[in-house]
Image (cartoon, rainbow, N blue to C red; front, side):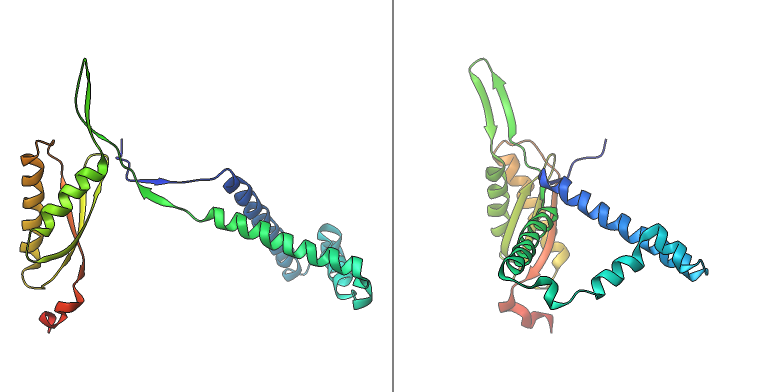
Length: 202
């Protein structure tokens, strides 16, 4: 079974948004088929009888300002437009995926009188502190996953990056052992170079 890495927060409204997307996609496919029929020389009257595209086009092009005259009609049209913008905009916002890494408490022991549990942030803070003890690291951010520990670091100098990352990994592993925490795979990723030390790249 693959290890879980990401979790997507979903909303019940996402189903409504996906249904609307499906309807729009079906409409595009349908009228794409009508365009194909016209391209292969099917009679326009036949295509219009199937889809009503010409009837709808003629009706829309025949609209004039007099057709929406009057404060009541204009108010209804404006209100419908604003309502459609709010509803469809909100549904589109809910469709945006919001992934986050899974996090679980670290259970160390359990007995008759309770159990010892370490919060994920405590493990992450331990790793970040251990990483910052290296003089080459100016920033560190840990993330405790389901069965590993990921650490992203920002370095203050560009020399010997591979050695720096290995040193950080060793420091974090040693810190876990010193605090009597279970050994975890530690993944160290370089994410940036401190701007105050950019001259070292030249």
